[in-house]
Amino acid sequence: MADPSTAPTDHPLGPDSLTWRYFGDVRTGMLGVWIGAIQNMYPQLGAGVEDHSVLLREPLQRVARSVYPIMGVVYDGDRAAATGAQIRSYHKTIKGVDAAGRRYHALNPETFYWAHATFFMLILKTAEYFCGGLTEAEKRQLFDEHVQWYRMYGMSMRPVPTSWEAFQDYWAHKCDEELEINRATLDIFSIRIPKPWFVLMPTPVWDQMFKPMVDAQRWIAAGVFDPALRERAGMRWTPGDEILLRLFGKLVELAFVAVPDEIRLHPRALAAYRRAEGKLPPDAPLVEAPALMAPPRDRRGLPMHYVPARKSLLDRVGSLVHSTFSLAGVRPARGRAEAA
Image (cartoon, rainbow, N blue to C red; front, side, top):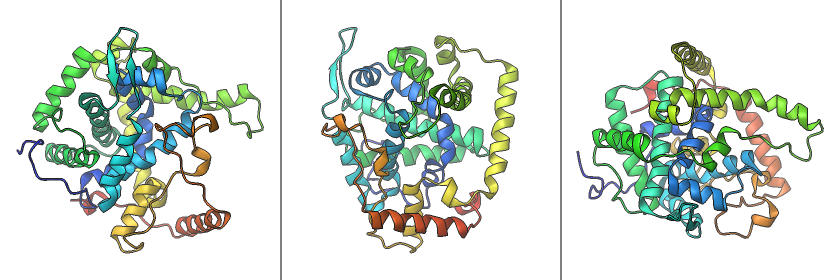
């Protein structure tokens, strides 16, 4: 297998890739607590979140808008490298010194790659638990694709493992030796979804409505954590829990057999498939996050934030009509046979 630091694979991923099949699937959202927690367990990344993030003020908006450019590095085709550079630019000012006196910078190659590695593992774990699993050959293909994907950021390839086997050693070492339970991690475990000002219901009712969703994601996270991390986080997991998670995953897999792409895929991924199928022009504007997902007004001038462009009323109406007719023309979801 080629060394990722020298292999000439700087072209973007396309619709024949396994990464396209899985990354844009909404089922990845079921591991939201898992990926938020395990990213923050990396000391430098957790310190950056503690010092610079406002995730607790707007958890839904923060996650929802960030996913758009992150998806774009996979799905934007010839524009993927530009999207990667856009994401890289958001991290330039995220630096400082943590509580233990350790310097950190979000553009440190090891830190930046760790975040990417968790997205790669997000695909593997989503596929394993909720999409019917992966063969060893598919895991190797996804590893090669994750290297190709990472090149779109224009970052140093030094931290990237040279093979699937080396990546497994890398991941085990991080989980066993380097990750820590810090404040940013605990914030994810105890996250609360704040009630928007325009929702006309008592806050306690709102909190109780979302509590089962957060509890369920925390339970799923416990199940998919490596044992060393689960123990470090003080999470309980029994053989009965494992059986329940596997059964739940099978139910999710079966339920999604008939889910149309318009529901199953993230909007950025759906638009990419439509461009690839000739249903949209290759240079069609990239799908951006809704304006209501913008960061708080007092944060919009900071370089670390992606601020979705505001659309005109005509654009919003057109988007609504387009989505309505798309959902009305329900078609079967893409099956495993269509992928490479």
